[in-house]
Image: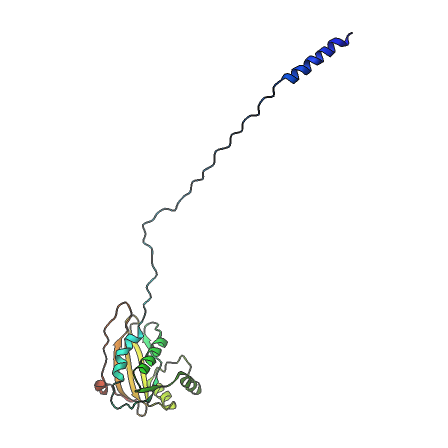
Length: 214
């Protein structure tokens, strides 16, 4: 009979546990987003430095008036063999003399049949035979005339750019290979596509003032 109170106590404990309502789980609120401020570079009022404008030389326009004068020289038989000497740069800077030489040859070829220009292959072979490098512009007239004689040319066109490289003067001289005499001279200035300048030249009638032996 002593076990009866224990059984009753146990039943009451179990009944209290069964009737207890479970507590709701706490609500977890999401954390607010973290905003990272973006720092922009400060605005400066300093001007942006632009690269210098490249000056484009219009060799055809620069040389065309002089070539036209040269093609009107009296006493030159049509088809005469002409050596166009590599344009010499005597300025205080760098010039694309290869383009100037190419422009001279093209203008002479387009001007009619007054001259037959020595071809590049024949000229290259003659330079090799005489021990002249491809970069040798034949700075002296005597060297240019000597090469022309080796090529059996009747005339040689000697060309040079002088003075300030920003505005050089261009000089052309047509020389008779047999005597080394300058039979025509012309001079002008370099033209560019932005700021064209006038070109002057010496006609064949004035060339006698510039004749000189080689």
